[in-house]
Length: 464
Image 1 (cartoon, rainbow, N blue to C red):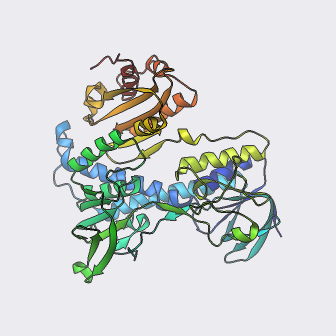
Image 2 (cartoon, rainbow, N blue to C red):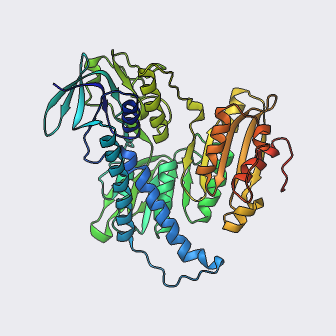
Image 3 (cartoon, rainbow, N blue to C red):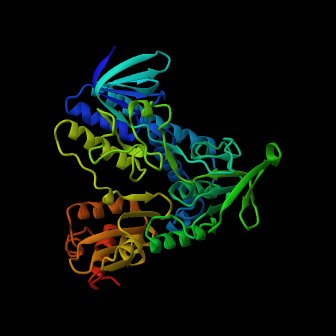
């Protein structure tokens, strides 16, 4: 019976990063993963492939419609979707191979199969070869899968999840996206750029629920200008597939409204944690009301020696959050004080323009009764943005009205996902808007927009 210091169930961002940090700290680490390729949903069928398609589709649209403004005339631009998908597959393989290389480098043992808790520090591995492992510490890092929507049956062909929507062999003439969160908007953008007529349906009366409302409204305007259609505040009650081959259609029924018809339907209504088949109940691991594993501040479950991280516990279902959970847990197991501040986990939507956010929104501050001031600065007033031809968007900095401490930063615009890192660093160290405003920013850069927004908190923006 193989024995290890730590056995981790799942090789996604949480699991594999935890394994790497554990090995760095001197632990004998093993990982149980059912897929042949390492990296989990994020690397194989999520973050990485979607960003590859977003990048490729953006290049295609730029060549067709935007390069002429720069004096670059690209004639007879054609789409080779097979080549685009092949590039995406290469990018994914480079990343999964990279995780495999790191496992070998750090002497991490990998078991192929699914894991089941047996209690008493034992894990059964169900796969081609049935095994039983023992460990002092067992970590649940099994991630999440797309959530289902009542009344809408996913068949993987006409009605799909994000996994299948990454692998369309042809551009659908029309696509209905159910859900206006990050996944729905990103994949909707991909297929819209490539020629599909995209309609987004959202239960709430806004897109990007949970993000700063004013910022979400700016993103909505931009996406509408790109040709995406939206029906907000609608409830989907069912979906029916009719016809075969090229005549196959999907009718999406709406409560109190006219049905919407399309060639394909993408269900993107969130994700749910993977907790079934793990032997949790028998091992004494408890779930909360949302089906997530219940843990304390140190990632400990009710079962002795069993921990959980990432999407299976409370908090944002984001790859970087899972990674930080994994690092913090390993450092705690090594006697350190690992910690993750969930209030400072940035959220990014990789549409064009990108949307990025960290900290509290204006709505949250108002609900909490926190006095605040805000500074807003537009991309249109930035020299670098003009030179790039990317003047759509704005940066908003929210600071405490009395202490000036930064409480939230919200960006819609080019490279927002990169720009938000400065805000996260500033807020991590308790910076004020004045601190950010007095930090030297290189010129000409997009980062100057962040500085100007910080200046605007005190009414001192320079270039407006």
